[in-house]
Length: 76
Image (cartoon, rainbow, N blue to C red; front, side, top):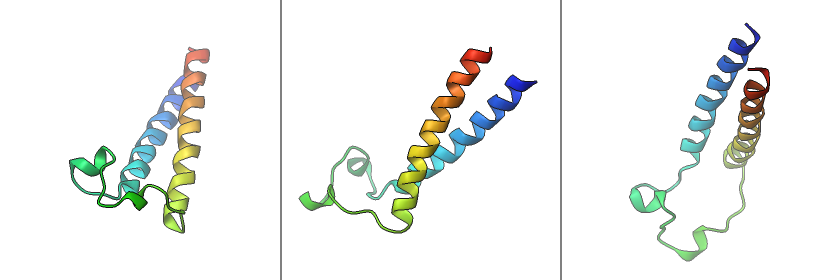
């Protein structure tokens, strides 16, 4: 039963992590997905507001996903 709860939490974390990553996508098209942009200055920018929240949330969710993956491995 304990392992099922951890698995469900990991699935929820993975879905939210995917949503956070998709919201961070700024450029449209296949070039934007692989780092292509219209200007050279786009790569370095300071994050503000929602962009900063999504960035930090993505890091936190990725760490939680990793920890739950390890927990499933250990408790299985």
